Length: 128
Image (tube, rainbow, N blue to C red; front, side):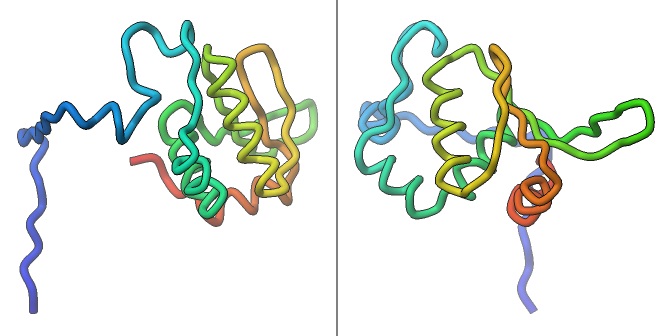
């Protein structure tokens, strides 16, 4: 029987390296919504290989699952909001890779169709 180390909320982990920009080229100076955000080829290949994981990360960072209501109905939907057109485009592209129908407002992407919400429920999971 193994022992599991559970981090407390008081622990902090730091990592320093000049190589971080090579691994995460989207990180850089300035506000994300004011600069170009583009995946490097190796990152694009990873998203194509596991689009569920990428979309899960987007939803967990800047999205949510909520209940849309009308006069006599209620049903869940996912939404993703961001000020960066490039990041919104990456979310749309990932939805397309997964065959999910989405709608777009100026800064928000919605996935509302019941079958698409059920599909996303399979891999999104609760926000941590």
